[in-house]
Image (cartoon, rainbow over all chains, first blue to last red):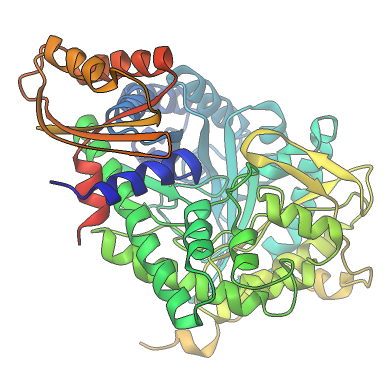
Amino acid sequence: MINSHDILETINMIDNENLDVRTITMGISLLDCIDPDIDAACRKVYDKICRYASNLVKTGEDISKDYGIPIIHKRISVTPVSMIAAACPDKSPVRLARALDRAARAVGVNFIGGYSALVHKGFGPGDYALIESIPEALSTTEFVCSSVNIGTTKAGINMDAVGKMGRVVRETAQATADRDCIGAAKLVVFCNAPEDNPFMAGAFHGPGEPDCVINVGVSGPGVVRAALAKAGDCDITAVADLIKKTAFKITRMGQLVAQEAARRLCVPFGIVDLSLAPTPAVGDSVAHILEEMGLESCGAHGTTAALAILNDAVKKGGIMASSHVGGLSGAFIPVTEDAGMIDAARCGSLSITKLEAMTSVCSVGLDMIAVPGDTPAEVISAIIADEAAIGMVNSKTTAVRLIPAIGKKAGDELNFGGLLGGGPVMEVSRYSPLKFIRRGGRIPAPIQSLKN
Amino acid sequence: MRAVITVIGKDMVGILARVSTICAESGVNVIEVTQSVMQDLFVMIMMVDISKSSIPFSELSDRLNGLGDELGLTIHTMHEDIFNAMHRI
């Protein structure tokens, strides 16, 4: 007989502590859709996605019903579209974005990621065209998400791409200024981007992945916080241990869902991403975990250490629970998507400089942060460069998803609704990095990468 | 193949009878029952065998949800796999 205590604990986690599977993401390779005629490529892309993903949403809903586990989103990630666009570089790849959008609508998924380019060493013709088209693509589609990888530990950082992306982020925000600049919320700039991340907006189906794959993203910051609250005044060793055990249970649920989804869809199981991904809902906040660990407000001194404990314990507990762990797998700190972060930003305890320090010990980067609408492109580029340097030197993934709040200044509010949340515009440094960014070129790979 | 039916809510006469009736009508055999009442809060956990059920699992779940709505109780119907997966190494 299963222990009654375990059963009630599971049910309490789901009902009261916001335990859920955040996403089942089907990764689909579009390499066989490459065609020098862009309209033919669009047809092949649309047909393949509709064929492979036709049962994705229904299967997710069935599994959710059978196991009693909420599965919040069903998503698709595809091969970086720049690789498809490379065969037809004279035409705008926006047509491919529209094909992705139509396909996403047809199969009923919440997002489709992969309008992406990998430019850490330099640009190919498809890359250049795609990056230039991002503002138009994201302002004229509903479901498409985009990402650009501008650096890796082994390759260094492409500062030409960094310079370009500062402008692209601004233009994307401007193109959607009438919708609270939501375009910029669907665009991520990466260093060391993972090929199998199931979360948006940075999901894409990397070139090393198989033809089709199922990846699952779990979540459960509320569960971790509740467990800590029950534990009371224990020492840090006990805190880390408790988080590990809780992460194990959460990840096991994701593993179960992933294997079942793969079995029912007849698609290989890829990975479970065991990230703690907050939502704006009450009781679903990573910042509140850090505050439960003993900080008056997220962003106080001690936050970086607390986050380091959390991130590491989540990974250790989760890895035991799953046969294949991948994606980002750690703690997310997206400001507008986390009720505790929003409060901390509003009251002034959380700043961009503190967030930058926190990114060195957690799994994402400067995520979902609204900055003043008049922030120059070169400042955005410099923020990207800083984040990329942290990721490159520390052999980890870092990313930037900034929202220039066009027409607004520090202290004003943005609101996207849904999982993307909303929050205050945060101040950035007013000193100019223009000469540094204008230099362009490449930052050489750091010495720790030359191990061969 | 087994499932776990959990009923949580205010204690009242006939909860066990109503849930058992739905199980019996659907060919679902009750293997084990644990229940406790603590200060008016009623918690019942039933382990059932659904391998010979005459209806699909989702329909059983729907019927029990309907009963829950009718009586003002929270009824969860879940495959045992989730509990095995989460609480065993």
